[in-house]
Image 1: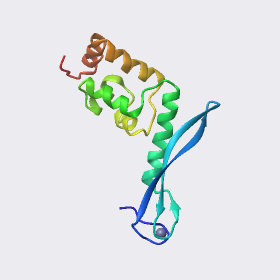
Image 2: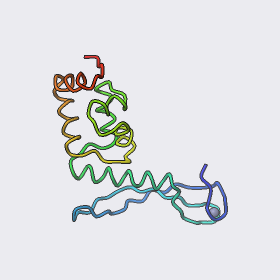
Image 3: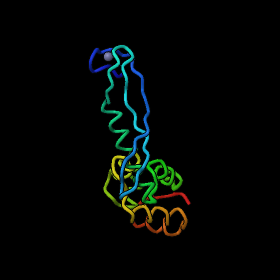
Image 4: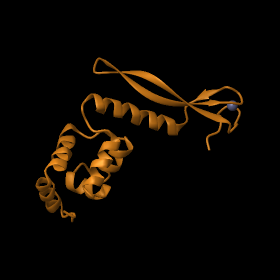
Length: 139
Ligand SMILES: [Zn+2]
């Protein structure tokens, strides 16, 4: 449970404010969370909300760039019946790549995004990559 950084009260309200973030000369609207103490009125941003905010900004930039969001990556991976670890073996990017993409901690590259989309569309391409990576998949 979050407590107030000033008075230690646990009577905290989460507030969502849409912020404008400039990216590549365009304004993106990103919903960002902060906390308000209902006891003393202090506003603050706990670490969990900072991390969610960073992920939200990253997702907004990805959307602008035409890349899949964290949720879309997770959906693509599960539709290919892969665990996060298997997906990293098949597509590359390092052992923890997919857990980072799906938490919004890191953005996938344009090349990675294209490869995943191709695999969603063309089962034989996916089968070949999985086979080369030594990952067994149900077809
Ligand atoms: Zn307080």
